[in-house]
Length: 498
Image (cartoon, rainbow, N blue to C red):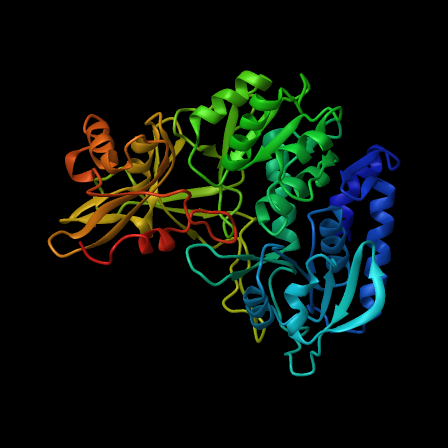
């Protein structure tokens, strides 16, 4: 019986063990070197004599060491937890409470985040990292808990809440996700993948880079996203696939316009964006520079895969659509009224997460591949099978009994040439229950006239009841630790009542 680590490295090892597999901040790695490191770290972790399913956290720059630790933990029957290196000491307290780790692999530049947590420093190191341990004598032994699948990974996602949520993944689920995405995108050993989303996110660690490794593709990894670092690392590498979030595309094209640098050559065959509403201006510039359109990917930390594009059969994005359901995934849209096209989206597949980790019970209840997962989005699927996000179910604004999608309003405002960012929320209204409020980033000569300018602009694009009645100019939109717009913080920018 093969292990998750064997499955992940199989294609690379069989198509050329001495080929370069990864280029990261610490150098170039061959497939054979990755395999050797994984086996060595597995042996080292087993030497602690810890119970199965003990947690190992890693804090430091994004690198191949995230994948080495993930694969080694899977082999050693432990659970890997990559920690966001932008976390604070308060966030570290959440990690200690939610995860109760046994071992920490900490880079010296960030280890101060956990300095107050009472760890014991060992004399050992793993590559550029120091190794520490915590007292687990009061921690529950989870080794005897029976589960349908094998837990190997936890990522901490803030979602729509302030505190992180520990999302638990299985080896079976991650294998399924990587194979489904690899098949959709036709990844193979000739591809060179660059995907800078942070490795504390499942998008960066799993959806993109783990898929690439399992497909035998070479990877170019960035320790942090920076257009300069990206160009330095990517130029001359023959990158064929670039995956990011909207912010990455926006910053990259602005940098390339100013400097004339071009990190991608004619080899680039596919670009994918996920996690946010499209920025058509930035995506058009990217296509003009590099010759490929930006396709979409839809999923969540809990429900993967979801919707996407096959770059061979549908090489151009359909306006406003996140693609079609990925083969191997089942979807349904719950429309209680039976009349509306939009309803709450549910997914299920072999890639379902296991649930939210609990250090006392492991997971309760366990989510299985047979369970339907609510995605929290209002969604439409047209007759041709294209999917459209209409808005977040929990973010729907109800004004005077009428449902208003913030996504629709944001899209209309974002089309204004002077707007570079917008977030729309509902705020309490004594007369209408909720009012529509918009926080806007942009270049306006007369900020005091913003409401008049954008109200007039929206009149031909939105029904009158959907047009914001409260406007605010901000230098930047507040974002959470996963770099998503923090709608709770946006609401805090406005008065509690109108």
